[in-house]
Image 1: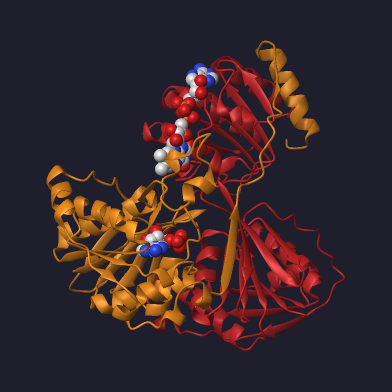
Image 2: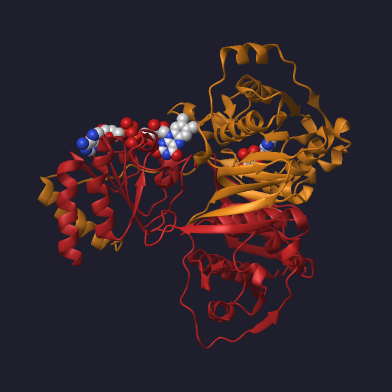
Length: 263
Length: 328
Ligand SMILES: Cc1cc2nc3c(=O)[nH]c(=O)nc-3n(C[C@H](O)[C@H](O)[C@H](O)COP(=O)(O)OP(=O)(O)OC[C@H]3O[C@@H](n4cnc5c(N)ncnc54)[C@H](O)[C@@H]3O)c2cc1C
Ligand SMILES: Nc1ncnc2c1ncn2[C@@H]1O[C@H](COP(=O)(O)O)[C@@H](O)[C@H]1O
């Protein structure tokens, strides 16, 4: 099995505090982690290799420091890691990012399974992996909560998808792209040996010319949307504390909720 | 410049998902602002009723495709069909609800049609002559204002429970256009083997009332009074990650950054401190109530009503009061 794990590096929202708002956190040089959803991506890819053999390649598009996310991937146990990074790629929208990643996947070569996460917590578009499947023309099985079976010889997978109102069991042919949700597994911690190995690993960096992409085909200029981020409006603390014992408080609360027309 | 608006009406078993009418409400506003016509798009196996409702809800035209292969939403046949329809339309604005299906379908279609995409938006407006979509990013710690730079289609999904649907007008008339399916069953690479629905339970993302428990409930049994209040109010049961990670309640109930994003009319948090990652999933609820034995937790910054006390003494009293007042 040739498995590709799509991993994004994102700001570390656990570092948010009174002194570190969303703008500061996202600014260059801010604290970064593996996109929390992609920890499940990596665990799924590694478990699949452990069961069926083969190789896992972690693929990340991002600034040079995104190599740290790939070090984590290597420490967890992926076999190879590739960083796609080129200053001209900055501010690509999700479709342009998907195109760049597709060019990288083509360069990696034949694959049986691509794994991505439900969404990346920064842009939260939940679109990039879906668009990669669309551009590659491979079947897409999203929101996978359980990879029930994978048959490398029949070239099929059966997976349970976690939807809003149902769990849906789907069979697809391989190669396919799946996106996974938290329920699928418990991501492992990098082992000490893994961390040491990852520290020594050199991660190849692919630029536009390595992917046969013209600079005009990437970045903000090639994108169909542009965005500007700002802090959300500050909420005034105007909580009404309801005092009194349980019976009194219950009566006052229910009064308020009826006045608010929410019950 | 005038621009037409198309809206995808998500449905299952001949029943539209409520989010579809919310998307329709957003679409009507955009069509008005852009001086364009409004077309609804419905796929399924029997969708005549929904097509009718779409016209009542404001569509000037409905494109319908009925085919056995479309009975249940699957991304490929739906996306290829919608992309084919869009190929024959002038550059338009396409709207859908940001449900699991809507997010996926629109992303796929944007890739097939080389369109701009703004997912999970909470506001849409015109600035100068530009359509601007507003969406939360970085789990609610940023607001992103998205502008479309290309000349092609502009695709937008709207977050659940943000746009209010208007009442339908039964006297409205509109044109219905049948469109053939794009893929035959044997060309579709995925097959749905079985579907397990959570019958009778109110789903978290659609609930208008949610009662959640956190670490403060102390254990699996501690959810009992929380569940009773949810039932008394006809709402859904939520939880913080701390409670889920402790194994007290299944993950499907988790609200927050790594759980579900919800926007109910009423959110009652019991024994939840209000960590930023939990707030990310619920802070846009219309009315928030916090019950916490600590009188100074972050959640009170966002709550509208607070009760500083032990949830085990206050919840039963609230349940009783609710039953009495609402006659349940
Ligand atoms: C990457 C990442 C993602 C995360 N994603 C999520 C997410 O999706 N959702 C989420 O919820 N969290 C998430 N978290 C965790 C989050 O940071 C908090 O740890 C979690 O929300 C805390 O849950 P809690 O409020 O139930 O527990 P605590 O913070 O421990 O609060 C428990 C509260 O209960 C009160 N209490 C105790 N006993 C009683 C009683 N008898 N009566 C009344 N009150 C009582 C206490 O005063 C306290 O305020 C995430 C964290 C990280 C790092
Ligand atoms: N820059 C990137 N590099 C590698 N994978 C990515 C990148 N962006 C998104 N992905 C993958 O696509 C998924 C969805 O991301 P998004 O569409 O950005 O919310 C992520 O969980 C990753 O698996």
